[in-house]
Amino acid sequence: MVKHHPVLFIVGATGTGKSRLAIELARRHGLPIVNADSVQVYQRVNIGTAKATDGERKEVPHYLLDEVAPPQTFTAGDFRRRALEVLAELVPQSPVLVVGGSGFYVQALQKGMYETSEVDEEILAQVKQEKEQKGLAAMYEELKIQDPEFARKVSNQDAYRVLRALALIRTHGKSPSQIQREFSSQQDEAFPYLMATIGLKMNRDQLRERVRQRTHAMIDQGLIEEVKAMVGEGWGNWSPMLSVGYKETQAYLRGEWDQDQLVEEISKNTMRLAKRQGTWFRRDSAIQWFDVESEWEQAIGFAEEFLFSLRSP
Image (cartoon, rainbow, N blue to C red; front, side, top):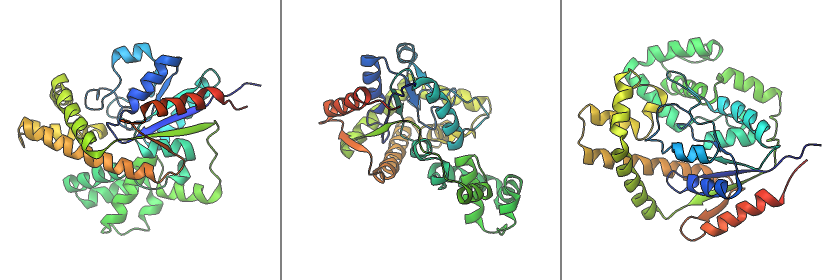
């Protein structure tokens, strides 16, 4: 019988050192890393997502980076399907690290799609922004195409339910009607591998300073040029281009603020994102939390004990 190696999830807010911990463990033990960041799955958005460098990717096998080219989108449901395919290949050979701060992706993989029939607030914000540009009538027409059954139950003036339904579709890759039917008709399959989850946390003032430093570094590395090239090719409204770092840089390119203000806006919105991520992950009592400043070695010790002392049939 094939033995399955364990899967370790490394989660936490942006900027807390998830990738650094994963790279350190992967280098020590020759482990593969599976990405669970909802923006890093997209091609060509590299600098603003702090994606693994070419050198790191040559040294350590990375999976589910650069999966999707414009103008395609990638839902939590897409992620679950692809991640399970990748894990089915990797887990018989080696322990695996799954790393990212996208709570919907992590929860979809660990618990299945029917327990994640909530709306990703980032996606909902994007849908609301589209409504401001296109109008509610156009959004309702989109809902009629995506889920005519649900649209018949909703007034074309009910902005809350129309926008939330569209955000649900984009979050999960399934219509509200389909999710409701599946939820009531079947139990979701369990995650088929032995797993544990490490959460990394950091003092908020220290995180704020780290975020500012990282924002400056991204601009020095060419974030503005990266965004300008994408906008120039007509991809300004593509899903990852509306994420933190990219939407602010687009505003900078439109002349809405100077470079100092750009740094402030990206830093401020990154901290807001970090707060949302922290709130999401703190709901999960199974996560083992470690402070990156004072408990780094303990996090490594926990990871190594889990990864190399346990195997499942």
